[in-house]
Image (tube, rainbow, N blue to C red; front, side, top):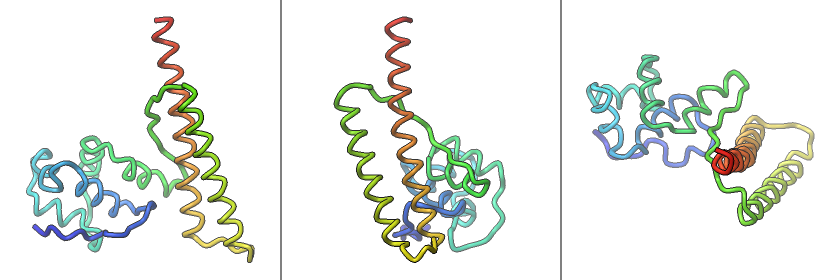
Length: 160
């Protein structure tokens, strides 16, 4: 099995096959570890998730890879074709430092949107510009909901 990364600079928005490859490759132990935990031949899995191939992928393999890796890029690639956004809020403490960090994130996202506005001054949105905008919007939403989840967790601990 090759150690060569077939997606060295894929960017933040991945197709389903690219996301499957990246989820398996980035998992601790790589594609071999995922295949062994699934009980299948590592070479068969490597061929199935190869981003440069178009072999059919078994749906149960996609489900097992998602369950095993929990890779958010894979979750996003699964729901993006339906026009949906998926994210998993991870509770963070809702203290002053976190809120300051969120303010910085919001400023950075605002700067990004402004740069996109300037970049598309011709009034024509390119697919890669829209995909990148969606990616950053999902990150911002996830940050906000993570703070909400942390506040809920703290409230339950206080009143639980």
